[in-house]
Length: 283
Image (cartoon, rainbow, N blue to C red; front, side, top):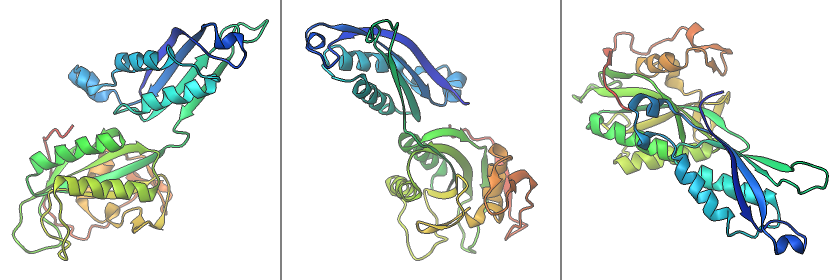
């Protein structure tokens, strides 16, 4: 499921093995990888900067393997997985390392590792009303650097909610990401991104802000978790959360309701809130 970059059968020679003769004579190894990543942006822009640079990854693997003297191909596979995951956009790596002729009478022996072993589907609500045309794209780039970004919703412009003070309109959207972080780790990353963009929290929780990122869903977790409640309480009460979420994940099962989002009638706190979908590309 999802987009992949696949390299098959990169053949190299190196010192590998535990026997004396294996420590003196180079042997052939074959390396393959499958990288889970989103290719939608690169496909749309035809720009190499928006994809995973598999040529660079291959060069880094060659630089690791050819001078190496590992005892085990298991160790080699783990190191290669770390190289792959060090590249932006790679959310999971499946590495196969083969050692032809390792066992007499056998054509090949391989090990395969997948890292990370677990991944979590997460939805983030993103908004802001201080220079949002500049700050929200910057925030999305930071999200890309900390998570594997799968999908972005259309953008909605809405009047400020929860205050009577004169403020600029908000821009809001929803992002789907994949991560191996736990809920506490996700919240920590979101706070870091907000601070990096310039948000300074105050006692006025409705104050204007350059960036606000809310954890809306984390897999099927429900209840109070690590400083907040899941699903996020505004998912079904605010148009600027529900509508962009509905655009990209109508079939997601909402924990606690056990039904697809499309089948749940929202109960808006402010039914008359002014909101409209706008043609703004944040990707």
